[in-house]
Length: 217
Image 1 (cartoon, one colour):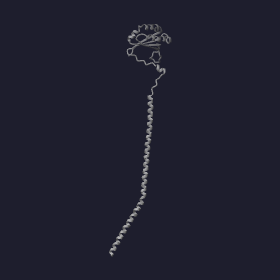
Image 2: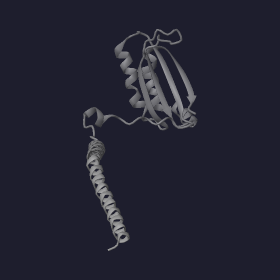
Image 3: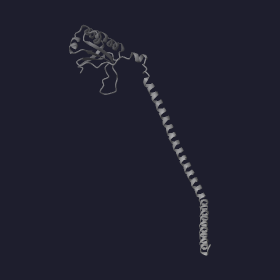
């Protein structure tokens, strides 16, 4: 081997050594970087775990709130159904019918007088004011007057005292005879039964009497 060849071999050997040293240094540097990055990777994983735990806790809280609201709605619906059931039971129950004597025997309300009927009103002052026997005798005459054709009803009663100045409370008794019409009133006056009541009851007991006739409208 000549000198030039030896020189070239030594140069190539130096280059190879230099390259090998560079490779070893690079490998050493990579190992150092991986060791220093380990704590960062661990911190990142812990942060992710904490975030995931917080998310699960928030989701659990939301689910609990939803469950509580649904339970409250369910109870409210049950209460409303119970109220509706009780109301329906009350509505379905039949209304009790009163069976007391007063309810059974209550007379129907009298119908208003028909147009054209005549009211014959007789107001009586007795010869002996306050004489109960004389009052009753006048009132009892209503039974006989009801038998006269055309007479629809006869009502009578004693005076109702009043402190009103416009009310005359001086009379003793009064009769109200309802007749079918003016023609019935005209026939009523001369009827024998009416004349008998006048002669035997009214005139002997009365100091005076006043008569009012009007037509119902």
